[in-house]
Length: 246
Image (cartoon, rainbow, N blue to C red; front, side):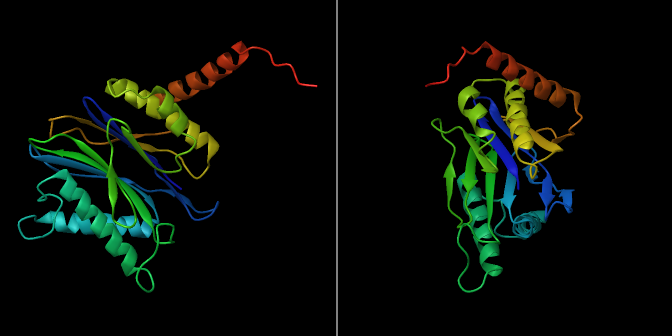
């Protein structure tokens, strides 16, 4: 299983993904689910993936190959004129990879070889954009009414995002919110686990820092995890007493 989240803030984008992959309780490993491409000063693109590992790795490999020498390789996400066209290209590639590994005319969204992706980034002169790409190749865009996207094991970490996310928050507060969301998911589902990859992207700064890998023992992550647990216990203790009916 996987948990990946991307936030659309007023000041830019924040991406976070876990790295756990497993094929049974005795075969657990860590695999990167966050991939980035850039042309410094011109564009920056990040992709988060969930689903069948062979499928998502094949999609990333194809996008990589087409981007090695953009002048000789079409279509390439480094040559697409808009982020919308980048999303179309990623969706087309994902659909083709799934169909290639499936019998007949391809598989449905819940098929063994499926995959789902979050795509975000910015091309110079345009606004940052964020998309959720489905196995069928179609996609939706994060808007003001739904300013964050999740894929994978979403249900445990979603409540904190729904209650506390504010697009005007700082990167630091956004990362703290994601720490809580991931900590809740990790504690509830053993198939999601650290280390966690983090990428922040400031609008119009088209040469962002490298992604950061956060271990389970990271002091900042541990402090938020412990503090959130203590805060929940305190809040529970402050609730009014309940009288059993009957």
